[in-house]
Length: 123
Image (spheres, rainbow, N blue to C red):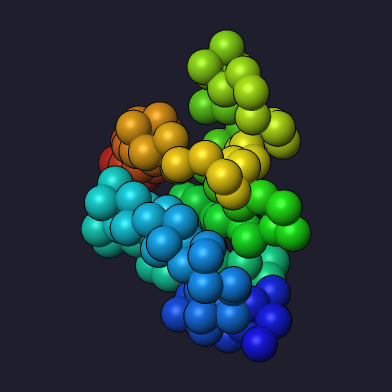
């Protein structure tokens, strides 16, 4: 099964090679740890999470990496801490032969959740 064409996150992860399941499930767990109320779905052909109707996070199972997308401001403000990772505007790529940077991802997700909660309270 091609995980890129999945209709659910469970199917997306199941469609990935077995050696990636733990990393992908780890990202999913970190997302729900930071935002238990997040709504999970597939968006832009990858697992997508919304919090209070706002985009919270995505992750992607690439050919030679796994990526997480959280927020462009968070990435920009932490470029020094993300040395060694391939960056994109709102996220970064992780190598398959290295463990997930769990503490860093958790911190970024918590920051994003707080940003969304503050913006939601202003409405």
